Length: 147
Image (cartoon, rainbow, N blue to C red; front, side, top):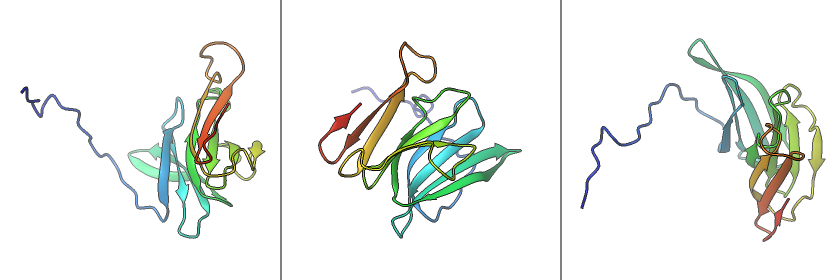
């Protein structure tokens, strides 16, 4: 049986860490930036979405959003580089798209995209990959996959 040298194995190097007051379920780098999004659920079952920026070796929260239901998943897959909108799935089956520059109100919302929690979401098209319009796909505990 072959063994792997520890110097050849993938390694994780921690640069910074931050304690959170909620359970994070999704982290996504904002395309072409030094920012990332973290979203999840608070102990009171509210959704929390935070935008962090790396500035001079420090992590700073530059925007945050409290939502009526916990966030389970998110993607930038169907967003253009100029828009940088994140599509999220929540615990009540809702699909929301937020502009990172204006998190107060979703730019697009389907509160009942699924009848139960949306466990996964992905998108394609917004980054100029392939042809056609940007599209999202979601998978839910209700047993449905929706495009």
